[in-house]
Length: 477
Image (tube, rainbow, N blue to C red; front, side, top):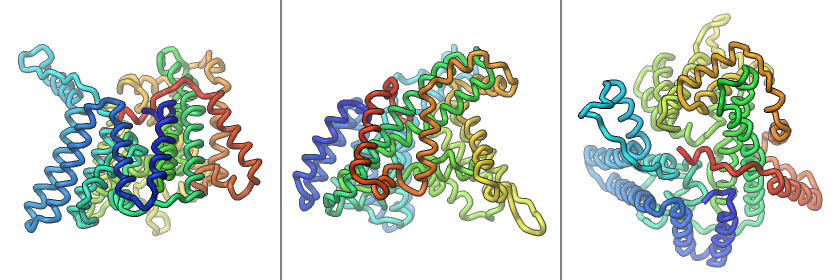
């Protein structure tokens, strides 16, 4: 069930009405309703995957209890590794097995050999990469003593399957989301209205901006060999805005929907195109994923070692390489992550100026915002080529064509009037950058009639100017 679908437009109000009719005093009954609704929401994709998410939930739930009960470190590690092995195991089988088998047989020339491995004819369960990381972090936090395991199975099942953020995040830590299922949630009108505004803003970014921009991006990338340098760079820049509006639009709808039920989810985006550096970009882009890898991959590597530039760089390459692989079973995604690591490591190279230790990041932070943003935007746009291309060879060919300055004879025909919505989006988010979303400023600055007029303009824009329906990009991950 897509957030931008008619079905979700019916599903959400029905669940919402039943939820608040139950009343805040009956927390358990509300949680039962949320669990049933979440399983129904997820089961519409393929009911068989409900068994997988249920099994994952049970394994991590009981692993957390056993880790806490264990009196020896070896027993604690056993249940921790059991949880990790299960989560990474199902990820490998469903997402990476065919990729690794194909590369292995190709590397050793076993395609036509009797020793060749056969691929699996299975589809990737939607949201698998998100909820496995969420449940795995629960087991890790219990093992580290950061949280106490819950003995409430219902609440834990809700934590794993909560439908607003189930299929594409934010990737929530148990310490933030799980306790919210234990306490009473009262109907806060201001919070409720803000949730609706977030949903409206998310739908606008997804349906009006991302889906319309996708038309130009798909047209250009369908035959990159026929395009000029300016056209290819233009399409890559558009794709950056497409994926930003697509994914952050989903996150806004998820956070807004959760607010309607009295829950607070983590912020996942913070206007990443205003970053002064690539390092800052990853503090603003898919924030919950970056924090996950920082906490569970980067930090453990440098924790017990001398924190030199080389050690930090090694940890950075491991983390970013895995972030790239997390996005998909393709060398393009791996190189996307490695590319990020290369640029961030260059920004961090230490050198001395007048006896003071500085780096490129130091000067980027001192530089006027406009110049620094152009620098980071060019680098991020280049990385988007690897994210969007079908293969590494295709990505390098596109980059080669861009730097070859091939004339773009048909450039004016692919610009499209609808992509002019991007400057509007940038200006609106820039001037409201201190707020959670642009509509937040309207509540305090404008009278009610003017506010409602603006809301109706956005609603009409969504209905009238929505692009061809596109599935959320991050659903494939």
